[in-house]
Image (tube, rainbow, N blue to C red; front, side, top):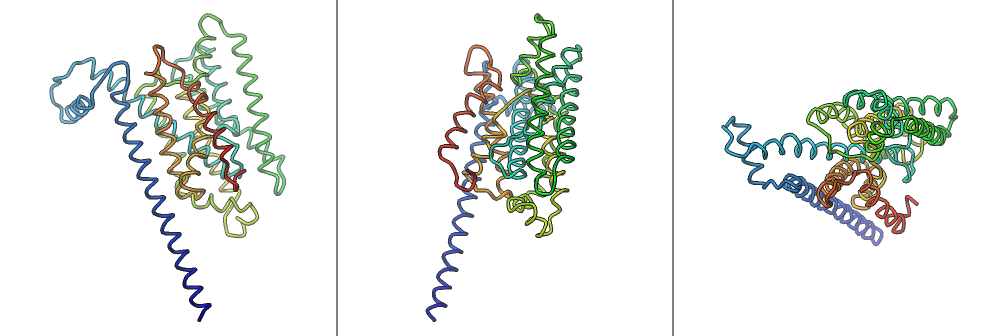
Length: 358
């Protein structure tokens, strides 16, 4: 009887602990959603040209109902041509980079990897620099960045898979990704060296620093398709990513096709990263820092970790973009601010540490 009472007490404690974790996760999610809503709504009013939330609601409802405009034409232009595309682009790019970073960290079982670990960002950077050098239009530059981002990861996966042996594929991919990134980085430096220093070089340099000052509604629509193609499959298989943390052999023993899952994760993460870089330029640290922050808030379960990372990544980048376009007399490139904010945050997370990841 004593053993029965002990078992009942242990079960009660476990059930109570499970309830507390569930309550904590729901509370954390509610707080993050509330913060995201505050940043989202505040971004409409935040800027050098002030627009009140009342004006935003009035204009949006009026346009939906087809009413004759009773508001200044300049306010409508700023809202629809600048604010709305920029706000939604920042949220999509932040969510894409955070999702790719979280997926790669789970796939490689390494908290130090980020969304550009396989060369997608450097490949896209080379593609954009090449497009600018060849005087392509904005759409051509974005297409070139996207194609070369995909090509860099394809090159990494092809070489890494051919080099990898049983149990060594992950390490081969990581090492190959470093080599491919360095290779495309050197190609980009070569393009900058031969570019016209008065026109092409400044454009390449500014693009490499990242920013959303030139984003348009068309850019938002262009990014939407690869974002959905990359994020939806990751969200659908996120429970399988938990199994990868046990190792490849254990995952296969549990019935998971590791090779197929690896290809799917790499393909989806590459789509997300390449599309984000092609629109916003080189924006670093989001895919590295945000998954760590999310893991501290909700734990390592990818069923919760992945969607919350996307929410937090979109909110984080939107907040940083608000700061970049409003805090100083001249707009600061977004990639600079994400590094200034992300590096100390990551250092804090390393010092704080979590035993299971360090």
